[in-house]
Amino acid sequence: MSTKFRNLKNDLNDLEREVGGVDENSSSGSVTSGKTANYILLFAFLATLLFYTGTRISNFSFGLGDRFENVVNSMNQASPELLDGMGEWLVEMGYPEMTHEELQAWRDKGVTATKTSEFRDIGYTDITLEEVSMLDQAGVSTTFARYMNELGYELSIQDLLDLENAGVKAYFTSRMLDLGYTREQLTKETLIRLRKSNVTEDLAAQLKEERGALPTIEELIRYRISNQ
Image (tube, rainbow, N blue to C red):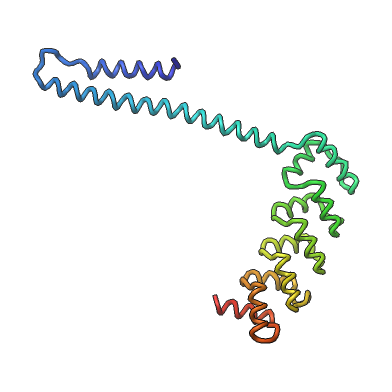
């Protein structure tokens, strides 16, 4: 029996001696007193049991949480072979040699050699590992950067971050170009304005069909604001 439950038993014995001493020669009122004592004992037992049990469950939960965190951290740790390959590839791309600890730290920030290489292939040949991390944290994918590049946009790292933060999608940009808008009309700032005004490519197509002409950017925004 654990120490906690031995303490529980001792506490209950002490309480029983305090409230259980009823005079056998007393009047019938002693029966009621005895029942009251039993209720008190039962209540004390349940309260004490809940306290000790709760403490044990709490300790178990904390221990389980620690073990789960250790498992997750272990899963996130790259193997030495993978880190070796990552380091060699980064060196080939012109980045300095790094220890396994440094490489793992970059991986924890979302940086991989594959992702870095893909951004460089798109045209961001001078991209830093810190910028790769910033793009990853913001949710900018290499796919988005590649599509925007294929649509004819020459965007800086900050441009990519601004467009992603505004929720601009490559699909929306492509559809607007298909409708007849030009890249000169659909600048980064204009794309962000359209997105923040909740202008969709379907709305632009609808107004073009209804009016028989392509609405201007300002007309799209004013129409959307007037028809919230």
